[in-house]
Every structure is written in C-alpha cells, then in structure tokens.
Length: 365
Image (cartoon, rainbow, N blue to C red; front, side, top):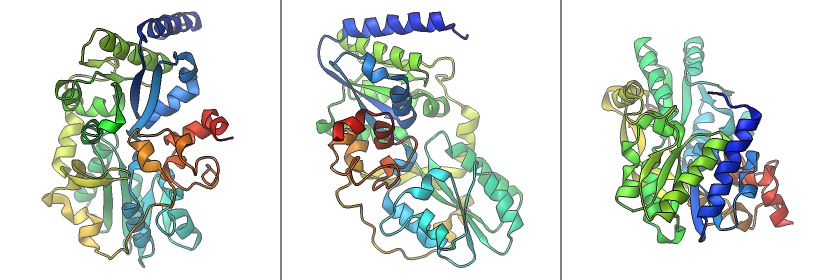
C-alpha cells in the first residue's frame, strides 16, 4: 500500500520519536547490507538518530568483500589469448594487486560489461572459438541467476562458457563478526533481499546462539527506521530475537524455487573475503555435475601472489571495526575518482557512501 507524503512523514516521526525514547544508553547497530548503507545516507537517517545510536556498516557489499586474489585471477584470465571476460560494471574499476580490469581493457583485453549473467551466453554463442568467462560475484541474491545461466549453458550444449565463482553467503560472515568481540555489535539490520531467497532459518543463530537481536529489513527509509525501532525495543526489553520487518517480501521459508536451482548447481565451500580471510562454508562452488563450467578447473593458470593496497583499511571497514574516515587514505589518497580500495569503488561501498553523501568528506577536512 502506497502512503501519501503526509502519512509517510507521520510514520517517520513516530519511529524517530520512538527511537529517541528507547535510546537510553549507547548502542551500536550494524547495517549488514551495502544497499542499506546507501539508503541510510541518501535518506539522511543518521542525522535523525539520537547520538546514543551508532550505525556501522558491515560486509554486505559483494564487490567490496571480493579479495584481490580473485581480481588478480580475473585479470590473468583477461590476458589469456582467445578469452572474453564478462562482468558487471562495478568490478571494472576495483584495483587488483598490480592492475585492474579497466586498465587491462584499455590495453586491449576483451572485457565486456553485462547486465545479467544470461547476457554472457549470447556472447559465448556468437564467439564459438573463444572462451567466455563470466565473473560470478554476489550473494544469495544473484547466485540463483548465475545457476540458472549454467543450467541454460548445459541445455544449449555450450562448451566455451565458464564462470569464475566468487559467490558468497551472508550468514557465515555474520558468525565471523560475532566471534570477534572487538566489533561490539548490539544488533543487526539484516538484508531483506538475501533473506527473500534463503528464508529466515539461516539467520536464527544470531539471536539464538549469540544473544544478539536481529531484524530482517527492507530498503525504504521507513523500513530502515522501523528496523532500528524494532532493534531498540528488543534491547530495552532485554530480548534477543530474529524479527522480520520486511514481511511484504520475505517469507519464513524464503524462495524454494531459487534455492532448488542453487542446490542443483552449487554447493557450499570455503572462500576468501577481503578483511576476513577464508571463512568456512561461506562460498559456493560448482557441484561435480557442472564443474566443467568452472573456469579454474577447465582453464587452469598460475597467478602470482596477491597483496592489499598499502594503507588501505577496507578490511576493517567491512568488519565494522572502523568507519571510513578513520582510514588514513579516505578522502586524501582514496577518492571515487582515484580509488585505492574496493569500498570506494562500488556504489554499495561504505567509503563511497560516506564520501558521496558528505559526512565522511567533512570529517577528513
């Protein structure tokens, strides 16, 4: 149901007044998803909150958490003769250890931006003499589309289509954060779109095992304000539950059809995260039945050792240990025009959001 402007303003006042009344002690809440981070800045939600409520960004930007090892591998494949790389646009400008996909493209590598994994199949069909490698980056939200694309490639008998998988699962990263006492998170705003696929069950451990309140939250400003309000209600009452603010989209059971496709093509595996290192069971690798589409299995190559940019503290930003202005590079050596770290590149990156919407820029002046 659409609200009028007056109804929206009234609801926003209800939640902000309620948050102010409930914020009787300092609390630190993590918005896990990069889309939440951008929505919070865009709507000016930080300015509406009392000083006792601190919002900190989490590891929910897929481009940001993809480590340099993956980027260096993608760059190495782009230099491979007879190879076409297909990727979402965000990945192009992320710096690897020595280069970036954009720099390689400028030097002549065949790297093409696609808007869906399925676009890569048409490129593979049109270029039968070349290997087409899709950079499969994302969380539970985008992984089903990649899985469906692999099923299509199998059905069409394509032998020159491959994926370089960096798909990740959000719950294992949350467990890693909760196992790090230095993070000090009092509650989580959980990503509504990943829960729409996985359902609520994978997130119950947050409250059940660690005693931390969590609310699955939508992406409108009112959704986020209500999610914060629900977290503060739990904290004031001494409760720790998993609640669903985004009921109009997220069902308890998630999306069984999408999960069925995922289960056909992928299986959980350990994978590396920027700032975290390898987290057990947090990635998705192709099952034996579809491993012929795995670029690293079908087209093995050697990649030199990777390294993170000097001075960059993206890893600590992604774990919620610091806010972007605490990084010595932020706004000085690292800007959207000349990014040092991935968090300044992606449209969902915390550093990019802090810089674009002003607060971070002011803090470093």
